[in-house]
Length: 386
Image 1: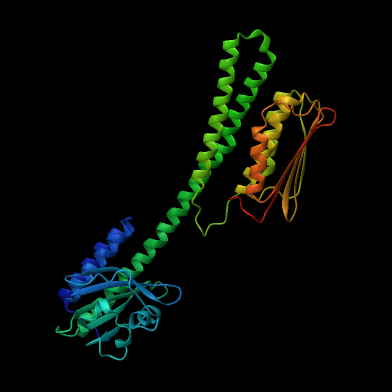
Image 2: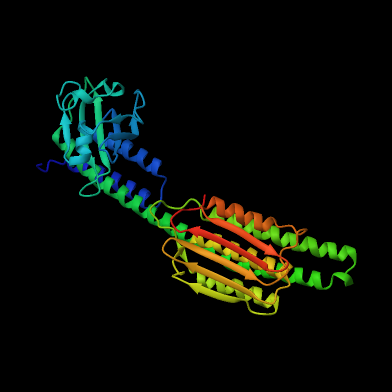
């Protein structure tokens, strides 16, 4: 196209594009930025209506923003890929019609909301590989057609602003992913550090309560029990917070992984301090790339199983086995103690059974006074917990 830009009009277009670029790249509200685009484009083209149409994967275009006076709101209207706007969005070439209701390129695809308009021009909204859709302007059927200089200014404006919005969208995606990664880091620290310390403190208090039961006054024993219950409740609240921090997860992101072997060593080390002897830990398979969701289930099962050993078993030997193969992760915690007493509340173990079921895994418990206790927890690697 021959350069026909009228200097004043070109200067106005550059000023408008600069204003929109500043708003988009500074994190302005996307809807407000699009509203500014159609408002400025209508002013530049002397149009009665301006629309931003965004292209979908199937080639159809939908109206996302509109500016004009005395018109039926066309936002949400979808045009087929064969329409002029669809071809502009796909092919990157501006289309101009003196009267779109009779022009054979456009007439078959004019929706009822736009039949009052005649002169029409649609330019690619972006350029190169960053075309988001089409920027279209309209005049009443009695209005004059868009001249070549106006179309050239519109085309340049649409290309520049479209590219800027594509870049801003990509920057927002990167920011969203960075924010998610920071949330994941906080969640991991809460889960692996804070919960672990609270768990250890609760176990130590429970051990003191059991050893000093006869020396405590009834009211003191009750207070200590309440403190332990509050610690357990705090742990559950933190776990809930962790789940909230990890949701929603960006669809494009692969679920983060965690080193389950290191987590298992930490859990076993704490249990050993409370038991007075180190449990045996056997690890097999690659445990450094377990998806965090899977690892959290295994870690919870290990923590609950060791908690029962410390609180109820009276064991002198405890063995933890953690195995990962191509299909699943298997946890076994076995002790030679007196088993889980029948009169002991096993809410935690029931929660593990429910957790395994929701996650598509298996849980079973075998406990007797003569044989000790075996807790087994298995999870497939290819199915996420709900």
